[in-house]
Figure 1 (cartoon, helix red, strand yellow):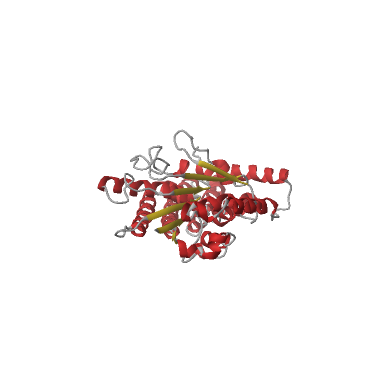
Figure 2 (cartoon, rainbow, N blue to C red):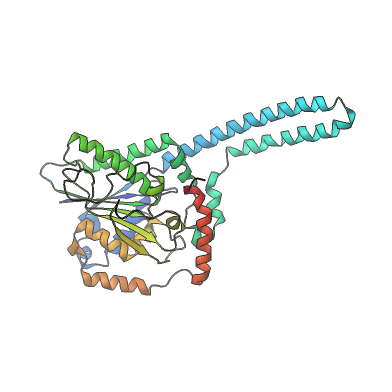
Length: 362
């Protein structure tokens, strides 16, 4: 049987080989799997193909379009303000006692121009992350990616098309071969996955191909730090939910929603309605890295990687005794955070307030 695991990132810079860099999801899974006897005998990447998917370059292009548009608009506004100020200043100077007011008016308008020029190089919303303390920041430096996804329809279309096409190519059936696949998406990637997989599934459903939801389905879909309920375009009728085989209204056997107690991004997003989207809920609270929001940090916990490895490679690959031992080790692993729970709670609440504006419209 051919087994495939897709890994879809969230915000931030990734680049070539992003998933296999130290701390990346593929690297974390390979290392974590080695704790179990089945994977020591036959390593993870011999059992399954790990397929990282990337789209951050398309978000960067959208951000560049925004900055250029904002800069051009600001320069036009600044030029118009200077023109109007000069006209008003000329009128005021007809009365000598108003000359000082005219000078101040023109000087104020002139100060708009350097401000407008600075917009092109502005880091957009990235300052938000820098303003947050280490634990609550959980959110990487490219918070503007969220805005790009929300507001730029061209960007969304390009990202969905790329991800859907890469999944389609990787899942292309081979004669006489069984195929088992798992999808793991993180953060903004959960919204991307929600839309891209729904679009692809509907296309295949209409064509009645071998991977159509009426014929085949994902063994599991993992949504880590799931923001799809706020950022995805598709609604509750999306195919990205669990259902029985041959059900044309779903495309997965199991759906896992993974939350982190100290992740401010997760706290901003409401939980899914279990009746509308049944899922297995997993909540973790480890703090083994300063960035508790990262993809790799979520996967490090055995409460997350054990069900993923089982879904991908078979239930027998991690025994109940091995799972219990891994969970016991995790419970005793020392946190990198030295602050009290009360201090962390205070920082978390501040982080929630600061990042809420990225998701919730006024």
